[in-house]
Image 1 (cartoon, rainbow, N blue to C red):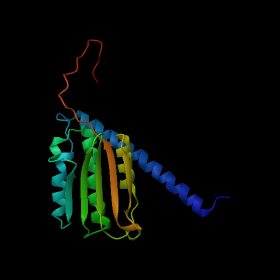
Image 2: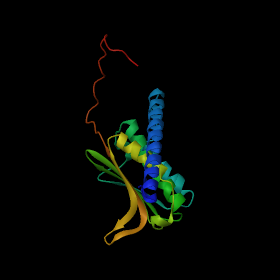
Image 3: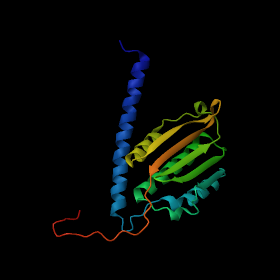
Image 4: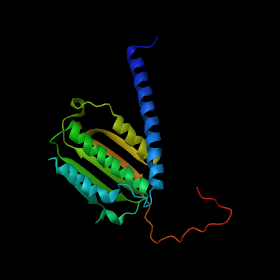
Length: 194
């Protein structure tokens, strides 16, 4: 006999799987649209200062920090899909802080640890149990980050004594750092373009 708790957990798992499948489809369509744009540009690392400023203009204290020798976000060359993933992690983290922890201080840290780029968005708002949500945005982020070969975590902020107040979202994505510009690809007559 299945208990109510087990049944509820199964329903929740089915709902999360359905959300994840929809998000994978949405991400695929977004990436296909990106490939069709003439510039291939989407919001990425260089758009983060503007995103932080937009949230600051609403009164939310946002600190955007670059660490590990990053002087300027334009120094980091990422595939546009990876740059978009970083942007979406920061955007969702700021939106969640605005929605669930108003008036909290939010810290965004971009760290370069080759071969990874890590993104941390944390706030010092109320404990997570007082800020309900359906988690769809976090499911979408997990799909986006893992789809790029990265790792994703989100949850209550941790302190030395256990769980503290606030929330943390962290993504670790692969990063490539070309040292030279690669030569143009040679196209042979037997290759076709899509």
